[in-house]
Image (cartoon, rainbow, N blue to C red):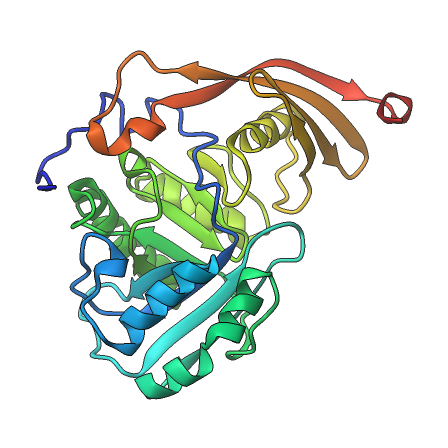
Amino acid sequence: MTRLNSCDHCPGSHSGARPCLASATTKARSWLLVEHPGPWPERIEQLPGPSPVADLVRAAQAAGVRPQLIRRTGRRRATPPVQVYAAYSSGDQVWMEGREFGDLDELAATLTGPALAALAAGRPPGIGEPVADPVLLVCTHGRRNACCARTGAPLARDLASRFGGLVWETTHVGGDRFAANLVCLPHGVYYGDLGPTEATAAVQSYLRGEVTLDRLRGRAGMPEPAQAAEHFVRAHTGVLGVDAVRVESVTGTGPFEAVVALPEARYRVVVERDVTAVACGPDCQENVESYIVSDLTLLNEAALV
């Protein structure tokens, strides 16, 4: 497919005029980030090979791990050395580890099938030391969609000037019409339709251990109705701690009923799909839906028995 150099997304995209909640990728729980200066092909599994990085990308996908190529903004160093991170973003026991590999053969020898299987299962594969600081990913994957480079590249430069080495450019994270997109690891918190002001506020909140609801897409690895239910409970209660809200269950096929737990309360939330009136282009038809809340009720303990 020939990629357009201009934006073909629906009106209101990239500006925050359309809702972007409940649109974080639902499948990513285990992550593998591998430094690669580019050029990046349209799809990362199309990296020319055989090469250690190309082979690793395909092996990670086969194991159920989400691979992302990453690079620094501006003048990029040749590789190796190669910075690699492994992360798990599901639940309240998130973690991340990382190291620099000076040799690509060493990288291939370390990230073998058993290591990738452990990562897919949520267990640290032991590729390096625990990483305490967050990793901030800005999608700049222009060959996947021109809007990601047009809006993402300047945002990555701006955030790097403010937050230094926490910031990396990355390949496609999902949701091109929400560019510029930001993913905060290890929790897998997604933001979209970002300018510098909104992105800076999102990063500052994450560094405090919180989310901000403005431009929040949701959390990776959760079903979209669960993301929506969490969002509405946060908006209703003002509870912003990244680990302070937990979706205990989601039932139904539409409308969806969720039970959402806070430290001292639980809520029953009913959400429904809401289809936008104007469809996007062919590359983002999956993103034309959003969610509305039709009921939000405080539960007592007896109601949960």
